[in-house]
Structure formats: C-alpha cells, structure tokens
Image (cartoon, rainbow, N blue to C red; front, side):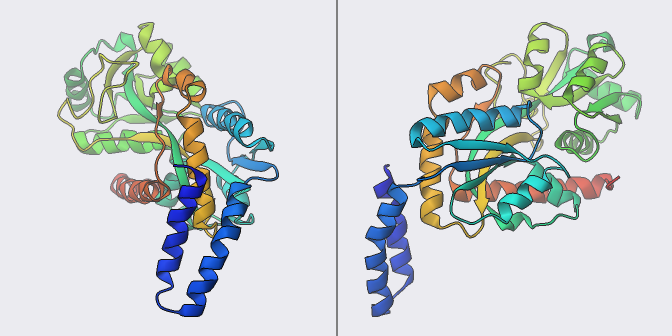
Length: 338
C-alpha cells in the first residue's frame, strides 16, 4: 500500500464522520488533495527520534538502525537524541510536549507500561502518546548457573519448593523493572518465592551468575544467547508463545505446563496524541518497510530479536494490556517504589 492509498482510506474515514452536513462535507473533499500533497512530501525537514535511555544498549542500537533506514528512504536527516533519566520519563515528556506533526518520534517500549503499573509520579499520562508501530519483540529466557546442578524446569520448581526463598534471582536494571515483574509473576504462577537481587544493568548481573554468586535470572534472549550456546548458562524455558529460532531446543513455559505466563520485552515508535491519523498512517507505512528490510532485520534476528511491526491501534492495545497485567503483579507482590 502506497502513501496515496493510505491517505485515500483515512481521508474517506474523515468524510464519513461528517455525515450529511453539506458544507463540512465539501470542505473535507477540498482538503484531501492538499493533505495528499502534504503527506507525500513528508518529511521535508529533519526528523528527531527521542530515545529515553543512555546510548549503547539494545534500545539505542535499534533506534539508530531504524534512523539509518529512514534517512535513506526519506533523504532528510533523521536525528537520534538520547534523553535518559527518571525511568525514561524525561525523554517521554519531551515528545509529549512536542508539536504533533510527525517530526518528533519516541522510540520506547515496555517501560511505558511498567511506569504506569508501578504508579510512578510522571509528568504525563500513558494516553498522552499514541502508537505508530511496534518494532521488535525480545522475549525472556530463564537461565541458571551450571553449578546449581539443575537442567530441567521440573527440577527448578522442586528446588524452589524445597528451599523457599533461598534460590537467588538477579534483577537486571533493578527493582521495579520488567525483569522484576517477570520473576514475581512466575513465582505467583508457581506458588513459590525467590531471593531477588537488584542490579544496575545486565552486565553486572551476568558476571555474578557466571561467577556463581547468583543462581539465575529471567533475561532477554538476545542478551543470553551467546552464553547459552557456549554452555556457560543453563536455559530452562522461554517466555514467548513459540520457541525461539536461536534457542530451538529450549521449551516455552506453555509447553511446560505454565500456559498463562507470557512476558515479552518490546520496543515501538510513538508520537504525541494529537498527531493526525494521516501522518501516523504514513509513518507506519514507511517504518514498517524499513523493519522488514533484510538490512535491518537480519542482524537482529541472529541475536534472537523478533521483528514485529504492528498497526498503530494494536500498539496502543499492547500498552493497555501490559499495564493491566503488570498492575495485577505489582498488587499481588506488594511491590512499592523505593
């Protein structure tokens, strides 16, 4: 579908909403050609992608790869602007307050839902942004240190029930993170509890697991793949609904009898809530094209990422769903902000 066809659909939707008001109907028809020219020319100046985390991590890397692909497609420069701080809320706030023209984008993910679920005091509401498209999904894998002597999920569950609170689980990026919520949700599903140890990032958590100081973690597949393949970590299960292509021998939790435990980290593109539907549709069209290109997808898929473009409406639904699930986890686990 090209941009003209996208515009034709959304323009018709606008006209239909006007009903039988003749003057408004005529005005809408008159506006469509001008809007078509405006959208076809988009963007005519540099586009800014705000990344609300520090440079160097996966979220930053994915945003920069997307920016490179869009710059080739659009020709105007696409600028990646890292605005870290306050659990990503500083960067989100800048996008919320930007003009709703499609020239300021937010590259963010599940942290939007986590922040809302935890009840953090934020300078915006989760409804102040609207989705454009999801970009990637990065499911988690339950890994243990080899020295623990556990090789199957059933053995892990038996150990947890035999030694309640003694098995230690690393929490990459700390208390109140999606990894923390994943561990708590799994414990709720299994009727167990673990000794959860927060870390400032994935690297120090991995070092302690590999060094035998912590027993395991639920961690992104893309971060664990190399150590699993090198047999430095023992994988027990993945949190996706289907097996990972990079870890095909590792079963899903559904296969292991835990059907209601699905946790996925994801990233997506958002814009201010007032951004017109036509602009969102064109952004979705162009970004989806970049996501599906082999240049973008191949290196990420090799690490275990799943390229997962979506409709704008679907991304909004994903955020709402995750907020609801995470709020239940927070309430049941009694998680409070530190």
